[in-house]
Length: 321
Image 1 (tube, helix red, strand yellow):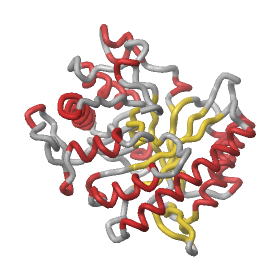
Image 2: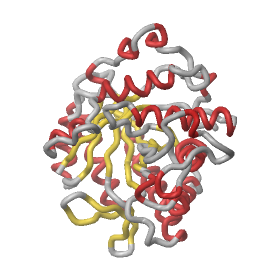
Image 3: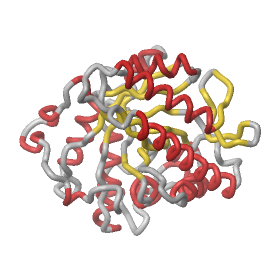
């Protein structure tokens, strides 16, 4: 798996391994914001990039569900007309341009995932989804080429994917990911997904496919999409203030380690306290960026079979509408 470290290659165990998880928190500048994109004009995208110029690290710009715009693959946009992959690429490039122009510290570098989801895809054919995944991979690679040529010192481009069991059949999600993975030179992809309905106790790990999750998915299905595909970098949603989401992901990792012999490595955690505050609150699922990171770190530490080095990214999603 050339794009990612295996757990045993992690270089340094976080100091939190000897004490509280909070002992490894990053400086505030490295607690990024991610965005559900609703305003994608040149001026809006440049302005958003500039507004985030005091941050460094991993984050995602989410562009809704896969769709087609005048025959060209694209994505839905919140509160605005759908846009195609060319327009999406332009919006991300404009964001980078604004970030680079306003960057507040010469050491800062933003690592941007260009995101879509598995929402509303059950009505699509497997061929359509495969081709959309290919188009997304091609667009992400093209944006990366532009960014590398002009602002490599300020930004790096990834893909991103909000994949949730409740949103589609596994076979449909897999068709999209297979298409993405088929493109030569495809870039690494933040798997900003959920583990809806997956087991919350070790007893739930049963058989070669693991325990059941929502919508006829299982632990194996979530592991397969979020890790078995080489581009995938696990960067899950840790929203529940009970910590149960982190526990679900730790158990998927434990399943992967004990049943598949291929344990996971987590690249970040995503919370949604900002989006919740913008929408009047969402009690019980409004972890802060620190709470999400702490829950994930603590659960991974709870079993030597899932312990890893420091989780690199911590981001909080909000609305850009």
